[in-house]
Amino acid sequence: MEKQQGRSKFILLYHRTPFEESKDDSGERIWIDQKSPNGIIPTLRNLFRSRDEGTWVAWRQVEQLKDEVDERISMDNPASFTLRRIPLSKQEVNSFYHVTSKECFWPILHTFPTYFDVNNADWGIFQEVNKRFADAACNEAAKGATVWIHDYNLWLSPSFIRASRPDLKIAFFHHTPFPGNDVFAILPWRRQIIESLLCCDLVGFHIPRYTENFARAANCLVGAKRGNKVPVNQRFIAVGSALTEPTETPSLYHAGRTIKLISSPVGTSPDVIQKLINDQDVQKHSLEIERGTKKGRKLILSASRVDYTKGNEELLLCFERLLERKKELHGKIVLMLACVSAASGMKIYEDTQRNIEETAGRINGKFSLIDWVPIRLSTRRIPYEEMIAWFSQADICWITPLRDGLNLVAKEYAAARKNRGGTLVLSEFTGASVLLNGAILTNPYSHKRMDQTIEEAINMTEVEQKQRMDNMTSAVEAYTVKDWAEEQMYQLENNPNN
Image 1 (cartoon, rainbow, N blue to C red):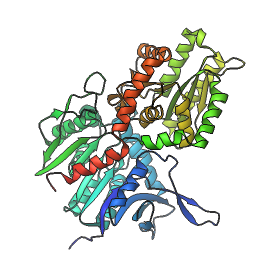
Image 2 (image 1 turned 135 degrees about the vertical axis):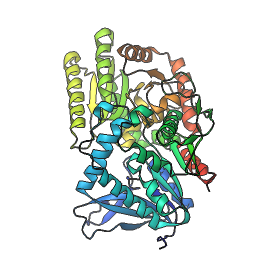
Image 3 (image 1 turned 60 degrees about the vertical axis):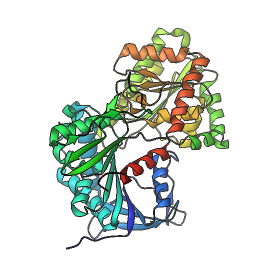
Image 4 (image 1 turned 180 degrees about the vertical axis):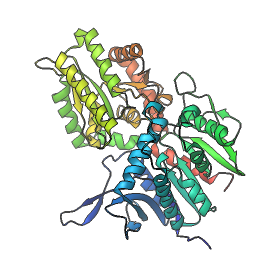
């Protein structure tokens, strides 16, 4: 029996929707832009401008699955495309996303195997949700269409799509790190995951290290043959950091097919950031920060979310050691820690947030003066325009994850500081560390190195700040989020299988 064919020539699978659903004053549904106007969502939406009959597949949570079907909504901004939303029950969302994805996959992907918990995982539900995404893609796809799948929670969708529609071109982009083979192999479903990704025509990662880790896993776990290594692209720093790789594997061969591998880090939108810097509301926020928080002091900014991978506790303890060593800095420096609360219901994140809040409170209690509180902690989601104002005022941006796939905050800070000074202190365990030549690289596992780098940043001359920032701004402008999307699609279209 011939499989159902749709009309879409381009289908995008991503658990996030292109817009956020809301209600107007009359209770009617409306679609509003994402809270952050920057990043990949607007870029992915823009891909539909040049592709007729496109479809974006996401999920929606429903009270009961009975009689629920996929919702198909016609969107017309910035282009005409269909939003297809798969109904998932609260139990399915919890199992598929919060338990299997976050409690099983997330700690392995970020090389925290001691946090790995397989006991509550329901592999059957994970498979079923991935199959629903794949079925939606197959039903929407015209003959020979392109399907672009995003991130690890849709690991199994490529195999279901390939089995049902071998005519389709399939790309996959991995937004998180991909760990070393010995860590990845902890997953009981390792072979099924790798076999599914090898059903793609193209698999993309942020940096060569993750590409190499995947190539090695595919070779060791399922016997995929590796192509001859090639030097990494010049956009990557090839030596010196914990995550650098001088060469990488460009392709894999498996089951009679060629799987192209590509290292292409998600970019930012420097033009959007520079426009916002001059926006009246952003400048108003900037003035409020200058008068309310800085007051002539040196401002250190760190922005992330509550997660044990983000290194927030290590950063706070380093700041405490700095204040203990350097009493002359009391009253002359302030740390703004913007640390967005995680979704409720996961004990490990609740414990992490409590530790962050308690540590910040203890440090403030220990060092505060009548007219100076050393740490400002915010766990609310700061609007993007306001965050740009913080970038414009921050003398130092301090980003110290224990592991991070890329870290767009570091890139956004560099874009916001164009033609200005400012210092970026960046963990060498972020993907961005092999892209931003000019950052001071630090090791969040080492007290000594953390202490050295924050002092180096505080004492850096304006001349050196400007030189380093110019290098980083150039790198950010040379490869934007638009360049990232275009490179992925170009490489897919030029795959030997097509």
